[in-house]
Amino acid sequence: MADNKTENALSSDATEVRAQKLKLLREQIGDVYPAHFHRTMTNAELGAKYESLEPDVETQEVVTVAGRVYSSRNSGMFMDIHDASGKIQIFSHKDVTGEEARALLPMIDIGDIIGVTGVVRRTKRGELTINAQKIEMLTKSLLPMPEKWHGLSDIELRYRKRHLDIMTNEDSKLRFQQRSKIVSGIRRFMENDGFMEVETPMLQSIYGGATAEPFKTHHNTLKLDMYLRIAPELFLKRTLVSGLTDKVFEINRNFRNEGVSTRHNPEFTMMECYWAYADYEDMMDLVERLFETLALSIHGTTEFDFGDKRLSFKGPFKRVPMPDAVKEATGIDFLAIKTDEEARTAAKAGGFAVEKDWTWGECLAFIFEEKVESTLIQPSHVTHFPKDISPFAKEVPGEPRLVERFETYCNAWELGNAFSELNDPEEQRRRMVEQLEQAHARGEKEKQLDEEFLDAIDQGMPPAGGLGIGVDRLIMLLTNAPSIRDVILFPARRNKAD
Image (cartoon, rainbow, N blue to C red):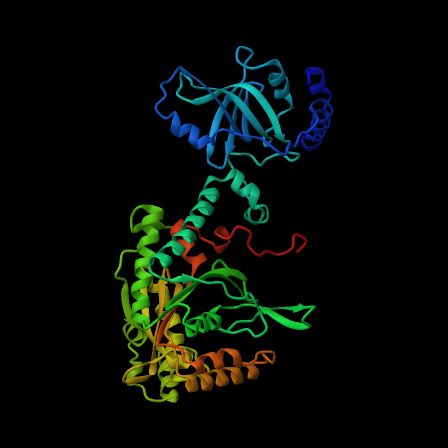
């Protein structure tokens, strides 16, 4: 293998040194990227098995592990290698390590992936260690790793090169492990609650189920313009009509061709569900049980920190009708206001800049967003939305201007949106036609009426509660992430040249 003369002859450029070492390795050992390697246990399994091993004790068991080299000391005599489960120290010395393995040490760089076979011991200092008998090169890394203890300081580079971010940042690694646990937890909770998971189309010839700008594409064989879905709602409701199940859900990817912020990404994850013979109050209970279950799964308690706030996911959450919340915050009693004009006048008198054509409900919702949203730090359900801005929810009995809808807020963020779903086919058609006309007036000429959905509703959809939860925002809260890009493995970003 490489002797001191060879080492001294290598280039001083770190990347070039690695390329030269790769060339030497190919010449001397052949395959530097073998297809197969069998390890007997992971680093975490090794640690668990020998947790009680006393210091300065060596076992007789020979094990085989593998991982990426994160540190190297004393010319490779001591190395730390990491797999996905954790790290283990490797010790190489002439008393325990064969000559061929020791000769490989000068060719190993930080970031290389190696396999090690040897005997397990615990050092006098208490470090679980493998006395290497055999070392194999499994992958030669051609690029230096970022400095381990500081990771990637450039935020944009962290998102662009997420593999390096996770490689050098334990917080990022843990966060994505927790994300997986949270998504699995949502699925397990819903299934245990009797919901059936289905999959609905991401490519749709007619987009709907929410108000948003879609991404457009074209199917060459069908000669058909198609859209990435903005919501799965209409297909899930058709599933409810079918009688396949009374409780249906989907953990879905949605795509909206709109802005990017710390809480918005063009591609995002939602959990959407529909529950026959239930209503919006049933969905409030479901949200509380789900949030409590997830908090316990991640933190072992329903209370946890987000930034400088202490949040509690212990139900029941605060429930407040929107008109009551606005009245408490501003003194404006919208339930006592009868007309759109009176609503605009009251809003202007309160110092709010409202548009001249806004309705009673639009004024109410705007003031809520301006004065109340930012105060909703602990989990809260805001109920009784204006019908003006909630065209697909059932009316509140005795108050036709309000509907049975709620949004769940926490940290002043909207996390969920739910209705007692409209299932009157004639009223559904009327409202969808009205919504289509408004979209065309805004210039959305491609938007169409979904006749297949309306045909299904004509068949008869049972009364139902519907709910959508923004999974990414929920994960942000549970993992103390300040930006949605911190919880999306590969978030949308500008091209490097931009």
